[in-house]
Length: 119
Length: 115
Image (cartoon, rainbow over all chains, first blue to last red; front, side, top):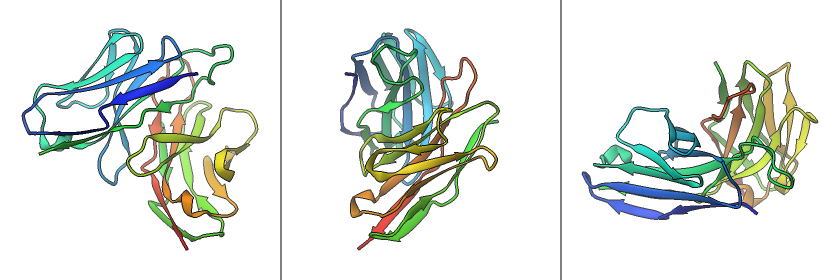
């Protein structure tokens, strides 16, 4: 079965410090990968998505960057955090194609999230 | 342009009464539609999905939704609310057409269940 791991679960960082959040998917290959941010009391904002290794699409100009060094690994980074980077970060994946016995195409599966507090 | 509108930011119901969470969408092509639930500080869990099969879709935990193309709606319902249903609910659209990888989220509806 497919699983998605996201860590850490919580993170408290000072303003100006770097950031690295990691997400990995198991049990599938060639997934589409996504990073979202959810500010307090608000909906989800798509930050980045990737359809393959080294292929990153950015949705919102900001202080963050993403990388996909391996097929099932997606990393969210920042060189210098801002107060406004605080929020709940969610990684997600969706199947690229329909696999026999696998999950239905089009469904998006989420990690447990990382609560980031920038102080 | 594709969009999703959740018509209520907050809904309060009494335990044992019906739940209705409203969602309208706009999509140029035949979309896939989803409802997700999020409990506090948790990831999103898929409740149900519509992908051009039956228009009445049944999901987990007694929830169901009906796709109405003429009204461009995909409202979520449950006959009888339970305390454990208190959470935030997101309506999501994935536009149809090739090469579409993005999912469009509504702003969410927070469901409160009163004892």
